[in-house]
Length: 342
Image (cartoon, rainbow, N blue to C red; front, side, top):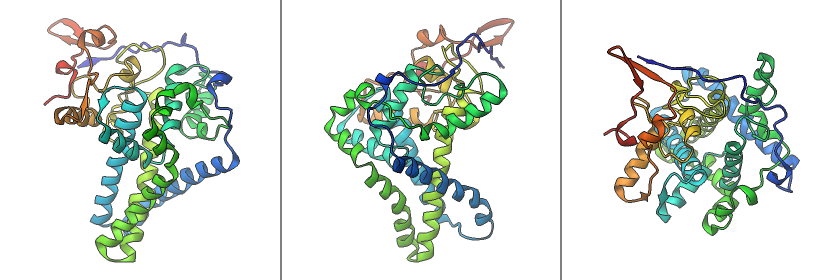
């Protein structure tokens, strides 16, 4: 068995106010209409998710809906995990032009914001992780249980209603200079609309009925979006509060194994913060990382190159976990060569 030594220390500074320096913020604050749109895209899919179980029990769920919902969940979720996160934010690999465009479109269709905004917020998060200036740290209000409960709500949803934009000019000038990616970011609303309506169109054509269109809209649009959003937001909230610290970090990022499959490997969050540019987040044996496996496939196909796979010597020095074998204690095993196991 692997014994995890929790090195989380109260000496690490908790976020008190969570405000970023003015230079990190855009000079265009969020307007009321933006906050209203955020509320719509948070509340409506959430209500659909709450209604999903009783609806599924008595009416309105068929194999068409399941297949369409899963397909859109994987396409948009991997667009966030591989595209917005590992590629556009952290440059964990280089990609051919066609794949770059597909990743930007897929991530946009997750309806988590335009690629420039998403990347700017996440780069700012890494700059100030769990310190003042982090846009969504659950430790924003302090360390006691009341403050942490409030902080979890902030990290999960509340931060999106903050009146300030992160400055894209400061945090992603590389993407601003990229004409194609900037164009995709500007047309986020169009891609979001396609993500909302395409499942209904496919469901209606597949079943050749209005009922098929309606049930596909409910399951593959509303429920799918709500579920993916909450999984993504859980990386901000749960993975900075609970779980295991298997690598030494300067913040409170943790690994949460039960979220690994649903998040495509994003919940191996502790390693990600120990080595943010690494293309594989679940580097220890048995840690499933679907996004890393797909990056490995892209590499084999020649679609990506210069992939930053885990380096055993580098990560071994950062490990906090130990394994007892034959009376000897040694570091927990990294997967072979840091790449996904065959």
